[in-house]
Image (cartoon, rainbow, N blue to C red):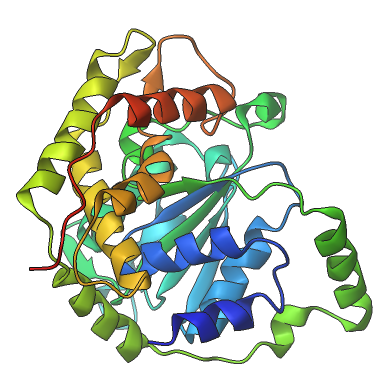
Length: 315
């Protein structure tokens, strides 16, 4: 898979966010989901649309609001009186590779819970029917900061946040990139002109190669030590879970693969640690955002406090 070509094509519609694009691509290759928390209007939805088009994947979008029902996500069973049988009407999680869950924290807790099974197990149970979703299946969710709670934004439960491999913040572009963005809209949406430079089969093949990336025992010990510190830190109520550790290792393998290596080094762990863990820790002092400067600084301190194993060589 030509990762450079994919990123290069995405940059035609998304300016100055190469790091965000690479990490989203990394999540897709590592069978993960990604959530983007940021202010409205900074390009979260555009990024999701760009990724799906360049990768040649089918995508669907759910605009979450307080009145969206779980059946609007998974589908429902209805009785066909002409045939005299029950029929399954599939929701938008079916028949798609990338599900854009827009403003996910505007949905009710019941609606958010409807995503838990499909995000974890790639299947959904509706009444007595269990159906598989497409492979690959990736949720790219967006959410506004909780400071917008006056406008119907609610806090996502920790159990749902834990299903996302990475939490990313887009942020404002710098002056040069924002001017380029403004000029690019003069002749329409640049997303419409993007070329498809990958395919479903290439993505599935890349996943198998990531599976084969070697992880030394010392790396497992390093990951455990990092997670253990988050669990004992005086500022943290809930630390990184074993699920979080597994995701951290998986994302480190993807990072190594993106760097052309078939083995994980401590630098791979450090490269993804913040994005994998920032939404997985629960602070004792309540915050209005998931991706806060306070959390990032604390996790960086944890990285500095845990001794990394010696540089590891390939097998």
